[in-house]
Image (tube, rainbow, N blue to C red; front, side):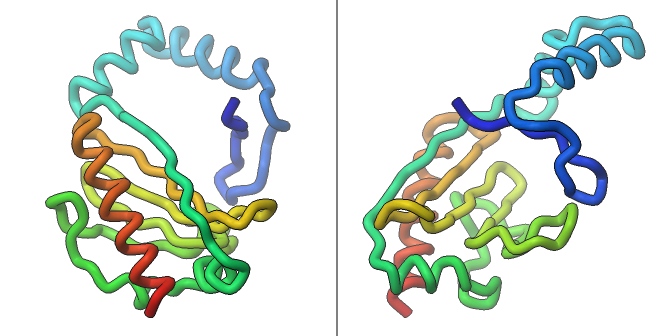
Length: 154
């Protein structure tokens, strides 16, 4: 199960892992303020923005490659397009608190990927989400792996 945390505006953790009270209160507040079920609100968002599809892949990495990945800079990602869309940003720090993310995150209008070395295994992981469906997600993951492998080789 993926950890869920609620963050303050400055990026610091407001709740502990797997806290069921916070999402329940958030759902109740959404219903009270809008008069609509949160499921209906989510359907409206997916109608307007697309339905999110997510996946993760892993690839072998040496200790040296993992160190290189953790220290990548946005300038080392030399692409301007990903899965047919212009790159909007390349991040190495969290927007909320400017903390290092220990890897790289590449964002386009219709999706993103983040690549990070594993702290416990000789692998790196690529996480990706797409708002354009499963085929777009597969393209994102394929291109992300090429981008990371190129950055690690160069």
